[in-house]
Image (tube, rainbow, N blue to C red; front, side, top):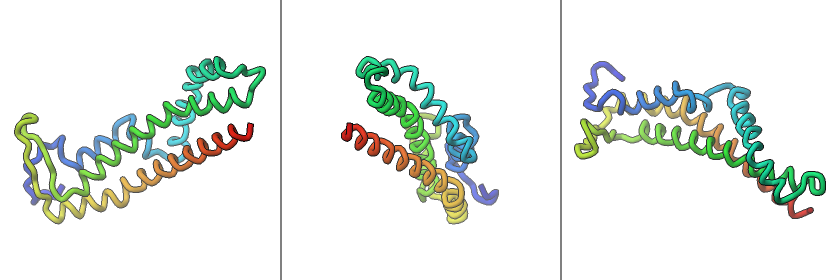
Amino acid sequence: MNSSVVCPVPVEQRPINEYQDLKESWFFRWATLDLWGYIKPVVILWGLSWLLSGPVAAMSFSPSKHPFQYGLLGAVGASIIPTLALIRLYLGWLYVKTRLLNTTVFYEESGWYDGQTWQKPIEVLNQDRLIVSYQVQPILQRLNRTFAFLGAAWVSGGFAWLIL
């Protein structure tokens, strides 16, 4: 933040610091990694989720008699936990985007009962908009592409199920 701007917002509630905290957090940092670093946790979560979805799918379809139905049902069930993790990533980054783009900052000085707002000066707003454009928006676009891929996989699985 520009040193000439006096900001009454507590340090931990400033949008720029919320962005930095998110970027450095072990969970939310995941969305900022290179492609393999981003995909790897999704694949690991999906694989671990098979420990739960595999037995559930086996109760519905015997793997030896109906391997395709078992595999499809297990794969869809295993995708639930990674999808929930990705939704949480998306919501966290969307929150920070909103805080950075807002022209005013709502903050609490000492508790829930004393909320205040601070109007961002134009230089702070411009800085925050640059961060959104070059840092946050690409992350949200990556997550949107991931959701599109998951949606296409689910729709393809649904069509495959109908063909059976």
